[in-house]
Length: 116
Length: 110
Image (cartoon, rainbow over all chains, first blue to last red; front, side, top):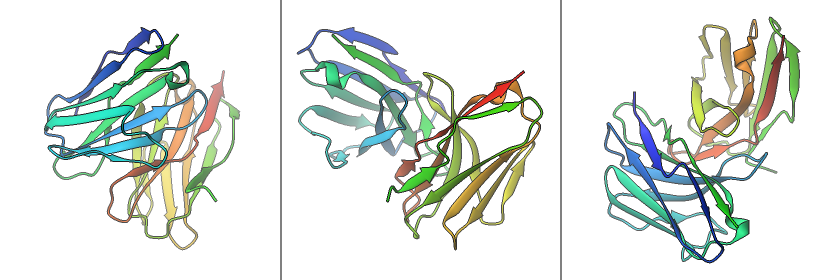
């Protein structure tokens, strides 16, 4: 099967700091990666879609200058939460597509961000 | 109207029960449909894709009604391990961009 990893799995930081989250496809080339955010007791909300080598497409209401996405290779995408504030505390999950023969999205294990 | 809506839940059922979840979607051009399950504080995991002809995987049966824009999931002989939140997922007309429903929480009780 296709495996997607995320790092770190959990991060606690002070308000105002920036946090980088990595998403890697371990055994396939991910043509597209997606970043989601999930608040407690709510469903996943798509933040942005990124294709390797091009700028990410952000969903309405998501600040591109606050959530910087880089998709530099077919196996790695990063999300940087700049100047994080307590309201950014959430569960951030990435997913990837690109495995031949399916449009299934394979999800990473998520990163739990807590901003104090 | 939300793009994807699901039964609000929660569903609390005894082991061995049969339980059905419903999901409706607003984009008539949606191409692909899935059921995912999500355990607490974990990532979603694909349970099954949903095909127009309906499909079954062991104790799980999924149905799609494009005319009514409706998807269902039936779980027979519920197990304790089925306890999770079940997410209905719909794609756009190109089969990309997943839209998640709010989820329906299931608790299977001993």
